[in-house]
Length: 282
Picture 1 (spheres, rainbow, N blue to C red):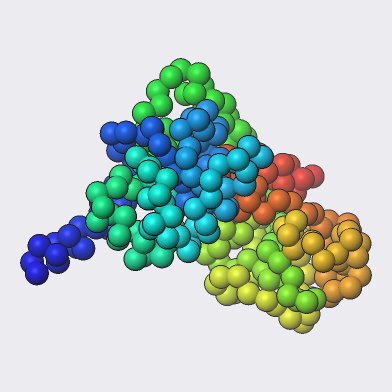
Picture 2 (tube, rainbow, N blue to C red):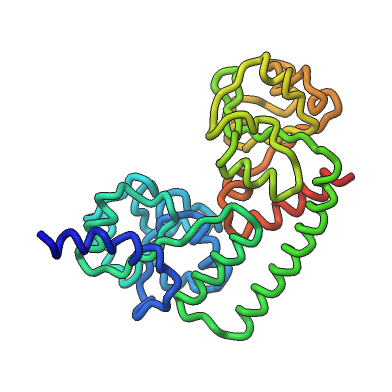
């Protein structure tokens, strides 16, 4: 019993010590769209043998076998692809599958998630170390991304002084928007661009009432493209919901964006955040 106890005690440490170089990154399975984006950014995609359904960028990912949804994976499905390395995001699961994969001796590395520009850079550097990528060309790509991050942080710093109130909508529940509260990827994105989250009075993603929308009265609203799927355009979204009473709607400051590009916290999130930071700074 003592040996079993020690194994499970040490299991979290072995997972979170995730940036050590893999002994064999020749057959890679990924559970998490941001990591897949990073692997393509590092030009290592020819080693991918399986990805989860959130890994839908770039388009070429559609040709790679799927292991299912990142939070609902199966041990058998993953092992059937004969991976030599599994890379996962923090929400990879369920926990039983993670423990089963570790028991097989599989090289499983779960990458730490810090929802910030610096966190994305650290994630890229971590994946680079795991894959053993040290070529100058790829290091230069990281350097170029760092320049974008520095510009983003400079603009975001100026935005912080302007009290820019932002609402970020994940989806619509009828006419009620499901909005990013604290400790969400949406909240992290708002902070990246130097804005203030109007829904900081609660945690998680929650539907809010018309009264709350009016009380929040954001200067800007961002909605995911999935959230826009029930509406023909931004005008239709505004006119059929309480959003029409906000400053954002009345001044034409509602924007739609790809959800993973914003909230995935992969490479694309830097460019997307920079674009919005510049919009909000005007």
